[in-house]
Length: 221
Length: 253
Image (cartoon, rainbow over all chains, first blue to last red; front, side):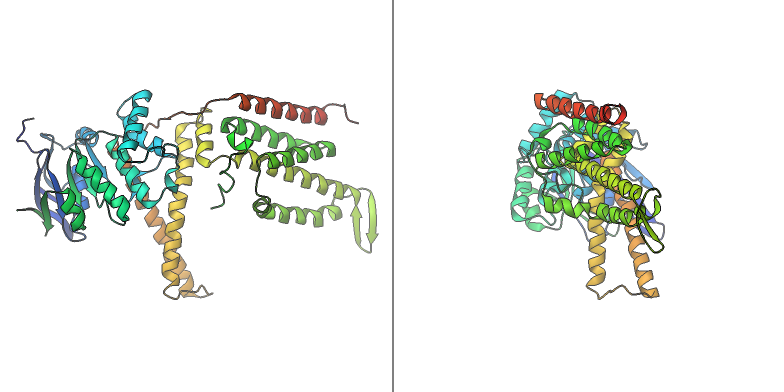
């Protein structure tokens, strides 16, 4: 894959949940390596849908999805995408299902075939990266909302992804957790695309902008 | 939620390996339930009280939990003395109280109380997740273990969703009455909960797929048997054997 190939490239994507109301109509987007961009658009404009299409959780009616330079069509094609692209869900309760924080973070690395020692190392590294050292044995569903969101980010980072797709990462967070998120993203060298309506937050972490309207994506200059 | 109210603490029983506690709780419950001698029942109750003290359980909370059991016992005490026939203790007109009935009621009271005390002080002092871990070390199929755990985990979420919907109904002046409007509203509430849980389940599964889930669950094992676990296990094990000997041999008349 050469340097000028976009990491994620969508072309002419159409999608609808119900035939009478299409969500995406020929949407195209390309995200280059190292880009840190915001994805803006009104509620219901298909931002989350777009993320789920990239991850292969949904299939487009038409159009092509290219991730890391190869076209992704069949379910198998998306296994590699899910390994190298991390998606942070809007609701952390959807993402944290294991009994303890350590096990939730370990879930992804184990699925990647890492052995127990490597996994334990990743768990500790991840917790210190998100600033929650000592949280290993905490019970996930008893964490505060902010802690849950940070741990959910941790479970995604533990996969050591190359691209992050963040769906409303700081919505409903207090100032402290919000600034922790900001710091983690500012220090990160990863490519990412953020859905958010928080312009202050976006101003601090994102450089470019994509805007969604009428089922299409436009890059803001 | 009243499931884990005793799980915080650092008494001896809180520190014992949950695997040991599970291995003890079930045989104890079994042996006590099957026993018939009053001496054994009294001994079991003594063990129950000792464990409650060792676990430093909050007595008031414990009594609250025993309420249901006490209601059940009360019913037994009103029915059994009149229905289990044998030696007449005294009669008052058509009502006869039998000694056998009283003995039976007393025995059931002692046994049920001691089983509850023992199980609560052994298992209640571990978190549900620790118990789930422990069970998965016993080669219980991981699908079963995770089914149980996920149900427990999302019960909290479901409950808060239920509470949210109910609050939303209340702040718009909903008060349940015996009429069609109430029934329809409750119907909507349950329907909404079902749909939300279905959608939630789908999102959880998607989130798992995104992290490379391929149908296998892994265990980050961190249980270690310590000396005190072995001591506790052997002590409790010998006590249980003692109970068994008293019950099923002819040492006692």
